[in-house]
Length: 400
Length: 187
Image (cartoon, rainbow over all chains, first blue to last red; front, side, top):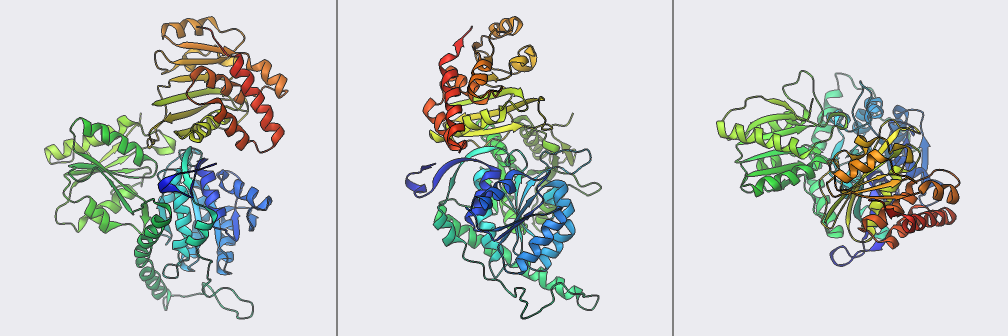
Protein backbone atom coordinates (compact mmCIF):
# COMPACT_ATOMS: atom_id res chain seq x y z
CA UNK A 1 0.00 0.00 0.00
CA UNK A 2 1.21 3.48 -0.82
CA UNK A 3 0.00 6.73 0.67
CA UNK A 4 -1.58 9.11 -1.81
CA UNK A 5 -0.78 12.79 -2.22
CA UNK A 6 -2.76 16.06 -2.20
CA UNK A 7 -6.57 15.83 -2.25
CA UNK A 8 -6.53 12.26 -1.07
CA UNK A 9 -3.93 12.84 1.64
CA UNK A 10 -4.17 10.30 4.42
CA UNK A 11 -5.95 7.87 2.15
CA UNK A 12 -4.20 4.90 0.63
CA UNK A 13 -4.46 3.97 -3.03
CA UNK A 14 -4.79 0.20 -3.30
CA UNK A 15 -5.93 -2.48 -5.72
CA UNK A 16 -8.82 -4.60 -4.47
CA UNK A 17 -11.65 -6.71 -5.82
CA UNK A 18 -15.14 -5.58 -4.90
CA UNK A 19 -15.31 -8.48 -2.45
CA UNK A 20 -12.10 -7.41 -0.75
CA UNK A 21 -13.14 -3.76 -0.65
CA UNK A 22 -16.48 -4.52 1.00
CA UNK A 23 -14.84 -6.83 3.55
CA UNK A 24 -12.23 -4.16 4.31
CA UNK A 25 -14.95 -1.54 4.85
CA UNK A 26 -16.84 -3.92 7.17
CA UNK A 27 -13.67 -4.54 9.16
CA UNK A 28 -13.05 -0.79 9.45
CA UNK A 29 -16.68 -0.31 10.52
CA UNK A 30 -15.76 -2.60 13.43
CA UNK A 31 -18.86 -4.82 13.27
CA UNK A 32 -19.81 -6.98 16.24
CA UNK A 33 -21.57 -9.85 14.49
CA UNK A 34 -21.34 -11.40 11.02
CA UNK A 35 -23.78 -14.17 10.18
CA UNK A 36 -23.72 -15.70 6.72
CA UNK A 37 -24.17 -18.90 4.79
CA UNK A 38 -20.65 -19.66 3.56
CA UNK A 39 -21.33 -21.73 0.41
CA UNK A 40 -22.46 -20.88 -3.17
CA UNK A 41 -23.84 -18.38 -4.08
CA UNK A 42 -21.81 -16.71 -1.34
CA UNK A 43 -18.88 -14.50 -2.33
CA UNK A 44 -15.38 -14.10 -0.95
CA UNK A 45 -16.63 -11.19 1.19
CA UNK A 46 -17.47 -13.41 4.15
CA UNK A 47 -14.44 -15.63 3.58
CA UNK A 48 -12.22 -12.57 3.99
CA UNK A 49 -14.17 -11.48 7.08
CA UNK A 50 -13.72 -14.94 8.59
CA UNK A 51 -9.96 -14.48 8.11
CA UNK A 52 -10.06 -11.05 9.79
CA UNK A 53 -11.89 -12.54 12.78
CA UNK A 54 -9.64 -15.59 12.87
CA UNK A 55 -6.38 -13.64 12.82
CA UNK A 56 -7.57 -11.12 15.40
CA UNK A 57 -7.80 -8.08 13.12
CA UNK A 58 -11.54 -7.86 13.77
CA UNK A 59 -13.11 -8.51 17.16
CA UNK A 60 -16.45 -9.93 16.09
CA UNK A 61 -18.62 -13.01 16.42
CA UNK A 62 -18.69 -14.92 13.14
CA UNK A 63 -21.66 -17.25 12.68
CA UNK A 64 -21.51 -19.59 9.67
CA UNK A 65 -25.21 -20.42 9.46
CA UNK A 66 -26.76 -23.51 7.87
CA UNK A 67 -28.82 -21.43 5.40
CA UNK A 68 -29.33 -17.83 4.37
CA UNK A 69 -32.71 -17.92 6.12
CA UNK A 70 -30.93 -18.72 9.38
CA UNK A 71 -28.13 -16.27 8.66
CA UNK A 72 -30.48 -13.32 8.35
CA UNK A 73 -32.52 -14.54 11.34
CA UNK A 74 -29.33 -14.52 13.41
CA UNK A 75 -28.59 -11.02 12.14
CA UNK A 76 -32.04 -9.81 13.25
CA UNK A 77 -31.51 -11.18 16.76
CA UNK A 78 -28.02 -9.76 17.04
CA UNK A 79 -29.12 -6.35 15.78
CA UNK A 80 -32.00 -6.23 18.27
CA UNK A 81 -29.53 -7.08 21.04
CA UNK A 82 -27.63 -3.93 20.08
CA UNK A 83 -24.85 -5.27 17.87
CA UNK A 84 -23.50 -3.77 14.65
CA UNK A 85 -24.31 -6.51 12.16
CA UNK A 86 -23.28 -7.47 8.64
CA UNK A 87 -24.19 -10.20 6.20
CA UNK A 88 -23.68 -10.90 2.50
CA UNK A 89 -25.40 -13.02 -0.09
CA UNK A 90 -26.56 -13.20 -3.72
CA UNK A 91 -29.34 -14.56 -5.96
CA UNK A 92 -30.80 -17.81 -4.55
CA UNK A 93 -29.33 -17.00 -1.17
CA UNK A 94 -31.19 -13.70 -1.11
CA UNK A 95 -34.34 -15.53 -2.20
CA UNK A 96 -34.03 -17.82 0.80
CA UNK A 97 -33.66 -14.77 3.08
CA UNK A 98 -36.71 -13.12 1.63
CA UNK A 99 -39.30 -13.64 4.37
CA UNK A 100 -36.82 -12.40 6.98
CA UNK A 101 -36.09 -9.26 4.92
CA UNK A 102 -39.54 -7.92 5.82
CA UNK A 103 -39.03 -8.72 9.50
CA UNK A 104 -35.60 -7.08 9.59
CA UNK A 105 -37.09 -3.85 8.32
CA UNK A 106 -40.33 -3.85 10.31
CA UNK A 107 -38.40 -4.51 13.54
CA UNK A 108 -36.24 -1.51 12.61
CA UNK A 109 -32.95 -3.44 12.67
CA UNK A 110 -29.83 -1.75 11.29
CA UNK A 111 -28.28 -4.69 9.45
CA UNK A 112 -26.01 -3.91 6.51
CA UNK A 113 -25.96 -6.47 3.70
CA UNK A 114 -23.72 -6.69 0.66
CA UNK A 115 -25.60 -8.15 -2.30
CA UNK A 116 -23.37 -9.33 -5.14
CA UNK A 117 -26.12 -9.19 -7.75
CA UNK A 118 -26.64 -12.45 -9.57
CA UNK A 119 -29.32 -14.05 -11.71
CA UNK A 120 -32.06 -16.20 -10.22
CA UNK A 121 -32.46 -19.79 -11.44
CA UNK A 122 -33.62 -21.44 -13.71
CA UNK A 123 -31.49 -22.03 -15.68
CA UNK A 124 -28.73 -22.11 -13.07
CA UNK A 125 -26.43 -19.12 -13.49
CA UNK A 126 -23.90 -17.49 -11.20
CA UNK A 127 -23.43 -14.22 -13.11
CA UNK A 128 -24.89 -10.75 -12.93
CA UNK A 129 -28.55 -9.82 -13.13
CA UNK A 130 -30.43 -7.44 -10.87
CA UNK A 131 -33.17 -9.98 -10.08
CA UNK A 132 -32.10 -10.27 -6.45
CA UNK A 133 -31.91 -6.51 -5.85
CA UNK A 134 -35.31 -5.93 -7.42
CA UNK A 135 -36.77 -8.75 -5.30
CA UNK A 136 -36.03 -6.61 -2.20
CA UNK A 137 -37.57 -3.42 -3.49
CA UNK A 138 -40.80 -3.63 -1.43
CA UNK A 139 -39.30 -5.00 1.77
CA UNK A 140 -38.34 -1.76 3.52
CA UNK A 141 -34.60 -1.98 3.06
CA UNK A 142 -32.53 0.98 1.92
CA UNK A 143 -30.73 0.02 -1.31
CA UNK A 144 -27.57 1.54 -2.75
CA UNK A 145 -26.04 0.58 -6.10
CA UNK A 146 -22.25 0.73 -6.53
CA UNK A 147 -20.94 1.30 -10.04
CA UNK A 148 -17.31 0.44 -9.28
CA UNK A 149 -15.13 -0.97 -6.51
CA UNK A 150 -14.53 2.47 -4.98
CA UNK A 151 -18.26 2.97 -4.59
CA UNK A 152 -18.73 -0.53 -3.14
CA UNK A 153 -16.25 0.44 -0.41
CA UNK A 154 -17.62 3.94 0.18
CA UNK A 155 -21.29 2.93 0.17
CA UNK A 156 -20.66 0.08 2.63
CA UNK A 157 -19.23 2.59 5.12
CA UNK A 158 -22.05 5.05 4.50
CA UNK A 159 -24.69 2.30 4.83
CA UNK A 160 -23.68 1.66 8.45
CA UNK A 161 -23.97 5.34 9.32
CA UNK A 162 -27.30 5.78 7.54
CA UNK A 163 -28.91 2.62 8.96
CA UNK A 164 -27.84 3.31 12.54
CA UNK A 165 -28.87 6.98 12.45
CA UNK A 166 -31.72 7.32 14.95
CA UNK A 167 -33.74 9.22 12.38
CA UNK A 168 -33.51 6.13 10.13
CA UNK A 169 -33.23 2.73 11.89
CA UNK A 170 -33.70 0.67 8.74
CA UNK A 171 -31.45 -2.02 7.28
CA UNK A 172 -29.39 -1.33 4.14
CA UNK A 173 -28.32 -3.30 1.11
CA UNK A 174 -25.22 -2.35 -0.87
CA UNK A 175 -25.58 -3.78 -4.37
CA UNK A 176 -22.49 -4.58 -6.40
CA UNK A 177 -22.70 -6.35 -9.75
CA UNK A 178 -21.80 -10.02 -9.37
CA UNK A 179 -18.41 -10.91 -10.87
CA UNK A 180 -18.10 -7.62 -12.77
CA UNK A 181 -17.47 -5.81 -9.48
CA UNK A 182 -17.45 -8.54 -6.84
CA UNK A 183 -14.60 -10.44 -8.52
CA UNK A 184 -13.27 -7.52 -10.58
CA UNK A 185 -10.19 -5.73 -9.30
CA UNK A 186 -9.73 -1.96 -9.52
CA UNK A 187 -7.78 0.85 -7.91
CA UNK A 188 -9.46 2.64 -5.03
CA UNK A 189 -8.68 4.96 -2.15
CA UNK A 190 -9.31 3.67 1.37
CA UNK A 191 -9.71 5.83 4.47
CA UNK A 192 -7.65 5.43 7.61
CA UNK A 193 -9.17 3.41 10.45
CA UNK A 194 -9.36 6.60 12.51
CA UNK A 195 -11.26 8.46 9.81
CA UNK A 196 -13.79 5.63 9.61
CA UNK A 197 -14.09 5.54 13.39
CA UNK A 198 -14.90 9.25 13.39
CA UNK A 199 -17.40 8.86 10.56
CA UNK A 200 -19.38 5.95 12.05
CA UNK A 201 -20.03 6.67 15.71
CA UNK A 202 -20.51 3.73 18.12
CA UNK A 203 -23.94 2.17 17.74
CA UNK A 204 -26.46 3.35 20.31
CA UNK A 205 -29.13 0.68 20.44
CA UNK A 206 -32.76 1.74 20.68
CA UNK A 207 -34.87 -0.56 22.88
CA UNK A 208 -32.28 -3.38 22.87
CA UNK A 209 -33.14 -6.86 24.07
CA UNK A 210 -32.51 -6.85 27.81
CA UNK A 211 -33.13 -9.92 30.01
CA UNK A 212 -33.75 -7.57 32.96
CA UNK A 213 -36.51 -5.76 31.08
CA UNK A 214 -38.33 -8.31 28.92
CA UNK A 215 -40.11 -6.90 25.86
CA UNK A 216 -42.00 -8.26 22.88
CA UNK A 217 -40.70 -7.68 19.36
CA UNK A 218 -42.86 -8.25 16.30
CA UNK A 219 -46.00 -9.29 18.17
CA UNK A 220 -49.30 -10.31 16.64
CA UNK A 221 -51.23 -7.39 15.20
CA UNK A 222 -54.28 -8.24 13.16
CA UNK A 223 -56.84 -5.96 11.52
CA UNK A 224 -56.83 -3.97 14.73
CA UNK A 225 -53.25 -2.62 14.52
CA UNK A 226 -51.30 -4.11 11.58
CA UNK A 227 -52.22 -1.19 9.35
CA UNK A 228 -51.09 1.39 11.90
CA UNK A 229 -47.72 -0.39 12.21
CA UNK A 230 -47.31 -0.23 8.45
CA UNK A 231 -48.33 3.45 8.33
CA UNK A 232 -45.71 4.24 10.97
CA UNK A 233 -43.09 2.27 9.02
CA UNK A 234 -44.08 4.07 5.80
CA UNK A 235 -43.81 7.52 7.41
CA UNK A 236 -40.46 6.59 8.96
CA UNK A 237 -39.11 5.41 5.60
CA UNK A 238 -40.08 8.74 4.03
CA UNK A 239 -37.70 10.45 6.45
CA UNK A 240 -34.70 8.41 5.27
CA UNK A 241 -33.90 10.39 2.10
CA UNK A 242 -32.65 13.64 3.73
CA UNK A 243 -30.45 11.64 6.10
CA UNK A 244 -28.86 9.92 3.12
CA UNK A 245 -28.17 13.31 1.50
CA UNK A 246 -26.66 14.55 4.75
CA UNK A 247 -24.51 11.40 5.04
CA UNK A 248 -23.26 11.80 1.47
CA UNK A 249 -22.22 15.35 2.43
CA UNK A 250 -20.41 14.24 5.58
CA UNK A 251 -18.61 11.55 3.63
CA UNK A 252 -17.44 14.06 1.05
CA UNK A 253 -15.87 16.09 3.86
CA UNK A 254 -13.64 13.21 4.90
CA UNK A 255 -13.05 11.53 1.53
CA UNK A 256 -13.26 14.23 -1.12
CA UNK A 257 -15.66 12.00 -3.05
CA UNK A 258 -19.06 13.45 -3.90
CA UNK A 259 -22.10 11.18 -3.93
CA UNK A 260 -25.61 11.92 -5.01
CA UNK A 261 -28.69 9.68 -5.37
CA UNK A 262 -28.98 10.61 -9.06
CA UNK A 263 -25.79 10.96 -11.07
CA UNK A 264 -25.97 12.92 -14.31
CA UNK A 265 -23.46 12.98 -17.15
CA UNK A 266 -23.56 15.29 -20.18
CA UNK A 267 -27.18 16.08 -19.37
CA UNK A 268 -27.14 19.91 -19.62
CA UNK A 269 -28.21 20.06 -23.27
CA UNK A 270 -29.02 16.38 -23.86
CA UNK A 271 -32.02 15.47 -26.02
CA UNK A 272 -32.00 11.75 -25.21
CA UNK A 273 -30.59 9.73 -22.31
CA UNK A 274 -30.29 6.28 -20.79
CA UNK A 275 -31.10 5.53 -17.14
CA UNK A 276 -28.99 2.76 -15.68
CA UNK A 277 -27.98 0.99 -12.44
CA UNK A 278 -24.65 -0.48 -11.36
CA UNK A 279 -21.44 -1.17 -13.28
CA UNK A 280 -23.04 -0.38 -16.66
CA UNK A 281 -23.06 3.33 -15.84
CA UNK A 282 -19.38 3.71 -16.74
CA UNK A 283 -19.85 1.83 -20.00
CA UNK A 284 -22.81 4.09 -20.85
CA UNK A 285 -20.74 7.23 -20.17
CA UNK A 286 -17.88 5.79 -22.26
CA UNK A 287 -20.30 5.42 -25.19
CA UNK A 288 -21.97 8.80 -24.59
CA UNK A 289 -18.60 10.56 -24.87
CA UNK A 290 -17.97 8.93 -28.23
CA UNK A 291 -21.41 9.83 -29.56
CA UNK A 292 -21.01 13.41 -28.32
CA UNK A 293 -17.82 13.61 -30.38
CA UNK A 294 -20.02 12.83 -33.40
CA UNK A 295 -22.39 15.63 -32.42
CA UNK A 296 -25.16 13.53 -30.88
CA UNK A 297 -26.82 15.16 -27.86
CA UNK A 298 -26.87 12.15 -25.55
CA UNK A 299 -26.56 11.91 -21.78
CA UNK A 300 -26.45 9.31 -19.00
CA UNK A 301 -28.34 9.16 -15.73
CA UNK A 302 -27.35 6.56 -13.16
CA UNK A 303 -28.80 5.90 -9.73
CA UNK A 304 -26.64 5.41 -6.64
CA UNK A 305 -29.79 5.12 -4.57
CA UNK A 306 -32.57 2.70 -5.53
CA UNK A 307 -34.62 2.63 -2.30
CA UNK A 308 -35.86 5.12 -1.27
CA UNK A 309 -36.32 5.79 -4.99
CA UNK A 310 -35.14 9.33 -5.79
CA UNK A 311 -38.27 10.07 -7.83
CA UNK A 312 -38.19 13.86 -7.54
CA UNK A 313 -34.51 14.29 -8.31
CA UNK A 314 -34.75 11.81 -11.18
CA UNK A 315 -37.73 13.62 -12.74
CA UNK A 316 -35.75 16.85 -12.50
CA UNK A 317 -32.73 15.23 -14.19
CA UNK A 318 -34.90 14.00 -17.07
CA UNK A 319 -36.74 17.31 -17.58
CA UNK A 320 -36.66 18.63 -21.13
CA UNK A 321 -35.59 15.36 -22.74
CA UNK A 322 -37.32 14.04 -25.85
CA UNK A 323 -36.76 10.32 -25.25
CA UNK A 324 -35.28 8.11 -22.54
CA UNK A 325 -34.23 4.46 -22.56
CA UNK A 326 -34.53 2.83 -19.14
CA UNK A 327 -32.10 -0.08 -18.89
CA UNK A 328 -33.15 -3.10 -16.83
CA UNK A 329 -30.86 -6.01 -15.99
CA UNK A 330 -33.85 -8.19 -15.11
CA UNK A 331 -37.34 -8.89 -16.36
CA UNK A 332 -40.74 -8.64 -14.74
CA UNK A 333 -43.05 -11.12 -16.42
CA UNK A 334 -46.43 -9.68 -17.31
CA UNK A 335 -45.63 -6.22 -15.92
CA UNK A 336 -46.16 -3.07 -17.96
CA UNK A 337 -42.36 -2.72 -17.94
CA UNK A 338 -39.39 -4.14 -16.10
CA UNK A 339 -38.73 -3.00 -12.55
CA UNK A 340 -36.64 0.15 -13.02
CA UNK A 341 -38.81 1.17 -15.97
CA UNK A 342 -41.95 1.13 -13.83
CA UNK A 343 -40.28 3.30 -11.19
CA UNK A 344 -39.03 5.80 -13.76
CA UNK A 345 -42.41 5.94 -15.50
CA UNK A 346 -44.14 6.54 -12.17
CA UNK A 347 -41.62 9.24 -11.23
CA UNK A 348 -42.33 11.01 -14.53
CA UNK A 349 -46.11 10.68 -14.49
CA UNK A 350 -46.64 13.82 -12.44
CA UNK A 351 -44.45 15.92 -14.73
CA UNK A 352 -46.25 18.27 -17.09
CA UNK A 353 -43.94 17.41 -19.98
CA UNK A 354 -42.72 13.83 -20.22
CA UNK A 355 -40.11 12.25 -22.48
CA UNK A 356 -40.97 9.20 -24.57
CA UNK A 357 -39.94 6.06 -22.69
CA UNK A 358 -38.41 2.85 -23.96
CA UNK A 359 -37.45 -0.14 -21.82
CA UNK A 360 -34.22 -1.95 -22.73
CA UNK A 361 -33.55 -5.39 -21.25
CA UNK A 362 -29.83 -6.19 -21.16
CA UNK A 363 -27.06 -8.15 -19.50
CA UNK A 364 -29.12 -11.03 -18.11
CA UNK A 365 -27.09 -13.77 -16.47
CA UNK A 366 -23.82 -11.94 -17.08
CA UNK A 367 -24.29 -11.25 -20.81
CA UNK A 368 -21.74 -8.53 -21.49
CA UNK A 369 -23.09 -5.02 -22.12
CA UNK A 370 -20.88 -4.01 -25.03
CA UNK A 371 -20.51 -0.45 -26.36
CA UNK A 372 -22.55 -1.30 -29.45
CA UNK A 373 -25.49 -2.30 -27.22
CA UNK A 374 -25.50 1.12 -25.55
CA UNK A 375 -25.15 2.74 -28.99
CA UNK A 376 -28.22 0.77 -30.09
CA UNK A 377 -30.15 2.06 -27.05
CA UNK A 378 -29.20 5.65 -27.87
CA UNK A 379 -30.13 5.12 -31.53
CA UNK A 380 -33.58 3.84 -30.55
CA UNK A 381 -34.02 6.90 -28.32
CA UNK A 382 -32.88 9.25 -31.09
CA UNK A 383 -35.29 7.71 -33.54
CA UNK A 384 -38.16 8.10 -31.08
CA UNK A 385 -37.13 11.72 -30.51
CA UNK A 386 -36.98 12.33 -34.27
CA UNK A 387 -40.33 10.74 -35.12
CA UNK A 388 -42.15 11.63 -31.92
CA UNK A 389 -43.26 8.06 -31.36
CA UNK A 390 -42.04 4.85 -29.79
CA UNK A 391 -41.91 1.96 -32.24
CA UNK A 392 -41.31 -0.76 -29.66
CA UNK A 393 -41.72 -0.13 -25.94
CA UNK A 394 -39.50 -3.06 -25.01
CA UNK A 395 -36.20 -3.88 -26.69
CA UNK A 396 -33.65 -6.56 -25.79
CA UNK A 397 -30.01 -5.62 -26.19
CA UNK A 398 -27.43 -8.27 -27.06
CA UNK A 399 -29.89 -11.16 -27.29
CA UNK A 400 -29.32 -13.74 -30.03
CA UNK B 1 -2.08 4.40 -23.08
CA UNK B 2 -4.70 1.64 -22.98
CA UNK B 3 -3.34 -1.89 -22.92
CA UNK B 4 -5.47 -5.03 -22.79
CA UNK B 5 -4.36 -8.57 -22.01
CA UNK B 6 -6.13 -11.91 -22.28
CA UNK B 7 -4.83 -14.88 -20.28
CA UNK B 8 -5.53 -18.47 -21.28
CA UNK B 9 -5.02 -21.58 -19.21
CA UNK B 10 -6.81 -24.31 -17.37
CA UNK B 11 -8.44 -24.36 -13.93
CA UNK B 12 -5.83 -24.80 -11.20
CA UNK B 13 -2.89 -23.36 -13.16
CA UNK B 14 -3.32 -19.82 -11.86
CA UNK B 15 -4.73 -17.86 -14.81
CA UNK B 16 -6.83 -15.65 -12.54
CA UNK B 17 -3.95 -14.99 -10.15
CA UNK B 18 -1.64 -13.95 -13.01
CA UNK B 19 -4.15 -11.38 -14.26
CA UNK B 20 -4.91 -10.23 -10.72
CA UNK B 21 -1.22 -9.72 -9.93
CA UNK B 22 -0.62 -7.78 -13.15
CA UNK B 23 -3.48 -5.41 -12.28
CA UNK B 24 -2.16 -4.94 -8.74
CA UNK B 25 1.32 -4.19 -10.08
CA UNK B 26 -0.05 -1.62 -12.53
CA UNK B 27 -2.00 0.05 -9.71
CA UNK B 28 1.14 0.09 -7.54
CA UNK B 29 2.92 2.17 -10.15
CA UNK B 30 0.08 4.67 -10.27
CA UNK B 31 -1.73 3.36 -13.30
CA UNK B 32 -5.39 2.39 -13.52
CA UNK B 33 -6.35 -1.23 -14.02
CA UNK B 34 -9.30 -3.60 -14.19
CA UNK B 35 -8.91 -7.31 -13.79
CA UNK B 36 -11.77 -9.72 -14.28
CA UNK B 37 -11.79 -13.49 -14.35
CA UNK B 38 -14.11 -15.27 -16.76
CA UNK B 39 -15.65 -17.83 -14.47
CA UNK B 40 -17.35 -20.90 -15.68
CA UNK B 41 -17.91 -23.83 -13.41
CA UNK B 42 -14.84 -23.77 -11.17
CA UNK B 43 -13.20 -27.08 -11.81
CA UNK B 44 -9.64 -28.17 -12.27
CA UNK B 45 -8.62 -28.74 -15.87
CA UNK B 46 -11.36 -26.70 -17.59
CA UNK B 47 -10.19 -23.93 -19.96
CA UNK B 48 -10.19 -20.61 -18.08
CA UNK B 49 -9.59 -17.06 -19.23
CA UNK B 50 -8.88 -13.85 -17.38
CA UNK B 51 -8.64 -10.27 -18.58
CA UNK B 52 -6.51 -7.28 -17.58
CA UNK B 53 -7.09 -3.71 -18.76
CA UNK B 54 -4.37 -1.18 -17.94
CA UNK B 55 -4.46 2.54 -18.57
CA UNK B 56 -2.82 5.84 -17.67
CA UNK B 57 -6.29 7.39 -17.50
CA UNK B 58 -9.09 6.45 -15.08
CA UNK B 59 -11.08 3.44 -16.34
CA UNK B 60 -14.84 3.41 -16.06
CA UNK B 61 -15.91 0.99 -18.78
CA UNK B 62 -16.76 -2.49 -17.53
CA UNK B 63 -17.32 -4.40 -20.76
CA UNK B 64 -15.20 -7.37 -21.77
CA UNK B 65 -11.95 -7.38 -23.71
CA UNK B 66 -12.41 -8.56 -27.31
CA UNK B 67 -9.34 -7.17 -29.07
CA UNK B 68 -6.42 -7.69 -26.70
CA UNK B 69 -3.01 -6.15 -27.29
CA UNK B 70 -1.48 -9.28 -25.80
CA UNK B 71 -2.49 -12.91 -25.33
CA UNK B 72 -0.68 -15.03 -22.78
CA UNK B 73 -1.16 -18.81 -22.92
CA UNK B 74 0.03 -20.31 -19.65
CA UNK B 75 -0.95 -23.91 -20.44
CA UNK B 76 1.50 -25.61 -22.83
CA UNK B 77 -1.19 -28.00 -24.11
CA UNK B 78 -3.51 -25.22 -25.34
CA UNK B 79 -1.18 -24.23 -28.20
CA UNK B 80 -3.02 -26.38 -30.71
CA UNK B 81 -6.26 -24.40 -30.19
CA UNK B 82 -5.13 -21.79 -32.70
CA UNK B 83 -8.47 -20.13 -33.38
CA UNK B 84 -9.37 -19.94 -29.69
CA UNK B 85 -6.02 -18.40 -28.72
CA UNK B 86 -5.81 -15.83 -31.52
CA UNK B 87 -9.47 -14.77 -31.52
CA UNK B 88 -9.68 -10.98 -31.83
CA UNK B 89 -6.02 -10.29 -31.05
CA UNK B 90 -4.83 -6.98 -32.48
CA UNK B 91 -2.67 -7.06 -35.59
CA UNK B 92 0.91 -6.45 -34.59
CA UNK B 93 0.07 -7.56 -31.05
CA UNK B 94 1.88 -9.84 -28.69
CA UNK B 95 1.59 -13.61 -28.14
CA UNK B 96 3.41 -15.19 -25.20
CA UNK B 97 3.56 -18.94 -24.88
CA UNK B 98 4.60 -21.51 -22.34
CA UNK B 99 6.40 -23.82 -24.76
CA UNK B 100 9.67 -25.54 -25.48
CA UNK B 101 8.68 -25.69 -29.12
CA UNK B 102 6.03 -23.47 -30.67
CA UNK B 103 3.24 -25.20 -32.60
CA UNK B 104 3.87 -24.71 -36.34
CA UNK B 105 0.29 -23.83 -37.25
CA UNK B 106 0.10 -21.30 -34.44
CA UNK B 107 3.39 -19.74 -35.48
CA UNK B 108 2.33 -19.49 -39.12
CA UNK B 109 -1.03 -17.90 -38.26
CA UNK B 110 0.64 -15.51 -35.80
CA UNK B 111 3.09 -14.38 -38.47
CA UNK B 112 0.25 -13.64 -40.86
CA UNK B 113 -1.28 -11.39 -38.17
CA UNK B 114 2.05 -9.66 -37.67
CA UNK B 115 2.21 -10.79 -34.04
CA UNK B 116 5.35 -10.71 -32.04
CA UNK B 117 5.67 -14.23 -30.58
CA UNK B 118 7.60 -14.98 -27.39
CA UNK B 119 8.11 -18.30 -25.65
CA UNK B 120 9.54 -19.63 -22.42
CA UNK B 121 9.77 -23.10 -20.89
CA UNK B 122 7.71 -22.27 -17.80
CA UNK B 123 7.01 -25.97 -17.27
CA UNK B 124 10.61 -26.66 -16.28
CA UNK B 125 10.78 -23.51 -14.15
CA UNK B 126 7.54 -24.38 -12.36
CA UNK B 127 8.66 -27.94 -11.62
CA UNK B 128 12.02 -26.76 -10.32
CA UNK B 129 10.63 -23.89 -8.20
CA UNK B 130 7.25 -25.23 -7.05
CA UNK B 131 7.52 -28.94 -7.73
CA UNK B 132 4.24 -28.80 -9.67
CA UNK B 133 2.86 -27.19 -12.84
CA UNK B 134 1.88 -23.74 -11.51
CA UNK B 135 2.29 -21.30 -14.35
CA UNK B 136 0.83 -18.03 -13.06
CA UNK B 137 3.86 -16.20 -11.74
CA UNK B 138 6.32 -17.75 -14.22
CA UNK B 139 4.24 -16.57 -17.18
CA UNK B 140 3.68 -13.19 -15.51
CA UNK B 141 7.46 -12.82 -15.49
CA UNK B 142 7.57 -13.65 -19.20
CA UNK B 143 4.80 -11.12 -19.91
CA UNK B 144 6.56 -8.35 -17.99
CA UNK B 145 9.67 -8.77 -20.13
CA UNK B 146 7.92 -9.16 -23.48
CA UNK B 147 5.34 -6.38 -23.03
CA UNK B 148 7.41 -3.87 -21.08
CA UNK B 149 4.37 -1.97 -19.79
CA UNK B 150 4.84 -2.54 -16.04
CA UNK B 151 8.07 -2.52 -14.09
CA UNK B 152 9.46 -5.78 -12.74
CA UNK B 153 9.94 -4.24 -9.27
CA UNK B 154 6.25 -3.40 -8.99
CA UNK B 155 5.27 -6.92 -9.99
CA UNK B 156 7.56 -8.32 -7.31
CA UNK B 157 6.07 -5.94 -4.74
CA UNK B 158 2.55 -7.02 -5.72
CA UNK B 159 3.58 -10.66 -5.29
CA UNK B 160 5.05 -9.99 -1.84
CA UNK B 161 1.85 -8.19 -0.77
CA UNK B 162 -0.36 -10.95 -2.12
CA UNK B 163 1.55 -13.97 -0.80
CA UNK B 164 1.88 -13.19 2.88
CA UNK B 165 3.91 -16.34 3.65
CA UNK B 166 7.53 -15.21 3.03
CA UNK B 167 8.80 -18.52 1.62
CA UNK B 168 5.89 -18.73 -0.82
CA UNK B 169 6.39 -15.11 -1.87
CA UNK B 170 10.11 -15.63 -2.50
CA UNK B 171 9.55 -18.77 -4.54
CA UNK B 172 7.12 -16.84 -6.73
CA UNK B 173 9.63 -14.00 -7.02
CA UNK B 174 12.23 -16.52 -8.18
CA UNK B 175 9.83 -17.99 -10.75
CA UNK B 176 9.06 -14.53 -12.11
CA UNK B 177 12.71 -13.56 -12.36
CA UNK B 178 13.70 -16.79 -14.08
CA UNK B 179 11.02 -16.50 -16.76
CA UNK B 180 11.68 -12.76 -17.11
CA UNK B 181 15.26 -13.65 -17.96
CA UNK B 182 14.42 -16.82 -19.87
CA UNK B 183 11.70 -15.67 -22.25
CA UNK B 184 12.83 -15.02 -25.81
CA UNK B 185 11.33 -13.79 -29.03
CA UNK B 186 10.55 -16.60 -31.46
CA UNK B 187 9.07 -14.57 -34.28
